[in-house]
Length: 220
Image (cartoon, rainbow, N blue to C red; front, top):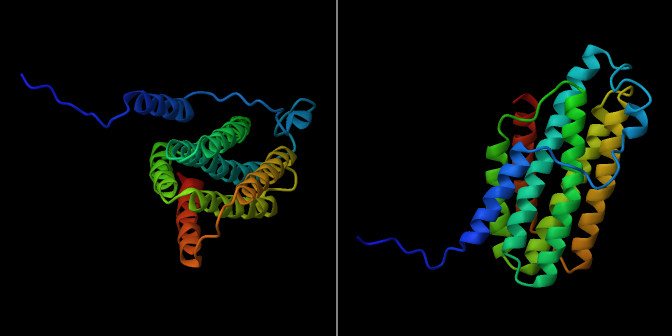
């Protein structure tokens, strides 16, 4: 009997990636930093100041933000796998770990709001993995440039949510504000490491893809 041979497949890497994907998609994440809304949710009921109408706005918005963090995990994982240098790989790994805090915070806030993550999270994760692998294969400067543009767009998206979130939802607003600061820091670090600005058509394509994702995730 002839046994199939896959000499170029790094099984340890594949299995590790699969385990990480399952953990991100189905396990409860634990943040390493303090929950930005802890001072609010520990002193009052998490939603006692929110009307049903407020919660119907905050829940979907935080679901969109949670999807963004699921995608960030996939992107940084894929880019780390394809990094040409140990230094760049370490940058992506650090960024992924730091983004885990955002994943945990948005998931906790969804629970407090009585809402749920996107039902399409496995699809979003798979798409982001593919995108990250492509970016990583384009070379160090382009890969870092992709981070710069991604974080720039995410930061703008988060600040737009501060305009959309109900004024009474201080907990969600605290989380989103902290996330925006962290995303800006990741983009600045990528620029410092030598990231190259992407062509304008690529930026517009990224923006269009993000618009589709956020529109769908708001509802599903």
